[in-house]
Amino acid sequence: GAMRHLPYFCRGEVVKGFGRGSKELGIPTANFSEQVVESFPSDIPTGIYYGWACVGNGDVHKMVLSIGWNPFYKNIKKSVETHIIHTFKEDFYGEILSIVITGYIRPEKNFDSLDALISAIQEDIEEAKRQLDLPEHLKLKEDNFFHLPEGKIANNR
Ligand code: ADP
Ligand code: MG
Image 1 (cartoon, rainbow, N blue to C red):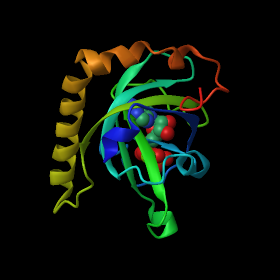
Image 2 (image 1 turned 60 degrees about the horizontal axis):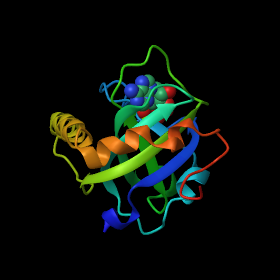
Image 3 (image 1 turned 180 degrees about the vertical axis):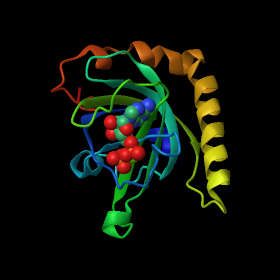
């Protein structure tokens, strides 16, 4: 399952996504490049995860993350999208996003309506916030990974 890959550290540039309108739903998701996604373990399950994220050398925030199937590649390649639980003044395309994934919430699901999708995501966010306050997850907020030079990618650190 998902747990054996966690915690999972990853760093990469934020690229343009599919324009699915996540931002219009109030849930913008920062997408990693195809190259970064390819570096993920191929057997990591798709679904909704949570953890910590930081843009550039900014503050570390809670995040929820989806590992899903990439519609651009007819769903044979994955996409990895991070929603940072923080309000940013500006977009940060092109910046380096550092994340550590610490827990798994649920598999991908299809929803009957946009409202159902949005409320599921709101629940995921609440669940992530609660879990990340627990010591085993909270301790990763302070990990040296977030204070290392940009070049270093964790899980090879
Ligand atoms: P795209 O399809 O290009 O990924 P989104 O609607 O998902 O567009 O918006 C993602 C972009 O919004 C990110 O790349 C980032 O620049 C910006 N953004 C602003 N606030 C956040 C946030 N809290 N979490 C993630 N991305 C954010
Ligand atoms: Mg996105």
